[in-house]
Image 1 (cartoon, rainbow, N blue to C red):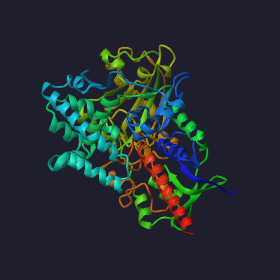
Image 2: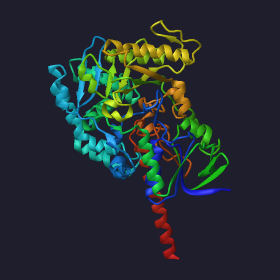
Image 3: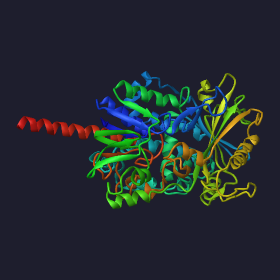
Image 4: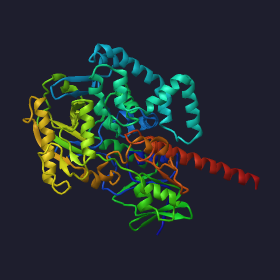
Length: 540
């Protein structure tokens, strides 16, 4: 027997939850359908290694969400439903080179600059100040539909703020690479050492167009809000949204996989999920990749052929991601004791090292010296481990999905698949790098859990080929051209069907923007229809 709601949301990634929260608060009946046993998509926490040790699976750090319009509008209610953030008081991130040289970032930009070459200190502060002057308007642009009147007004506002010459320079900066930013702004190597690894967190190598502006945005974000984590694990972020949605009459259903989106003509009318037929009076929102949306969920003739073809061509990164989670018998004691209090430490030899490992991974090789992201969440939130212990969250963003060889010539990659033996061998390569920098390594090491690119994809179908950003972030598939070059909007060519998530503008990261954009659009469209209906009744 068919059921009906106002809006069906496919997938409970954070953008799906954000959309559902806005819709439910607006009085619409909404149901989120999630194929996994628990909601959250790439936001989750679990005891992966040993009992009592809570690890954030996938994402962990929430500076972008803390800066988002969604948090500004929903934060107080989310707090009432249990969302608490543990804040970073002083140090935010650092990089350690192989020779032990350390560069630190503080919440204060000027204090950060004191660790740079004296020739670069004022230049760095000036860059952050200049970015800070434009970020309110830029931030608003990242939170609206680009093909909209709001975006046009904000673009005009930004152009007036900058003027013609500065505006042209700003546009060039937006399109520049991180390497270009480092090499044209700074004379010493410390800024590049500190932030070159952060280009990977944008989904781009440091030599790719567009990575420079995004790295600068990350630097500004870290100065603004630090590296907050959810108290007790990222799963509590999801639980707060579930409670909010439920409180406003919505529903999050888990263990339910959507098999097909129902259409009538070129309009989405609902979904088939197992033995359920769920009709949507207002809209269907798909928190999925274009490959899933146009290749599996929609019938072949439900969308224009050019949209189906563009969905098929949606590209995923040539590099995959992987994670290593470690239960720590005691907190890490770094040889440079300042690192004991740093939430995220990169192990990297700087710009060239990051670029080389990206190229090796893209070529199908296990990098000889991958950039290692060492997360120390228990530095910020001790509740995630038993007293006196800790957890370590290691992210790797330069690994091949199907390894064909080893750049170092030490590991047998086998037949191009991630076997348990290959996972262990590569994990040991990564973990052995800690010994040169951590006094109590490997003594502090407890049980480990490795999540290979194949395992990440199995856990979350949006992470195709282990792409943790749900789609290549190169310039030709970003901004106006995301998710599709001919349909760079969250409204699909199927009426009443919307798309949100990392595969859509403004892209990956826990920014909540696409979920909010779609929800507000559905609410506004409903309001116009309601006003039109009221006018018709009056005229009659």
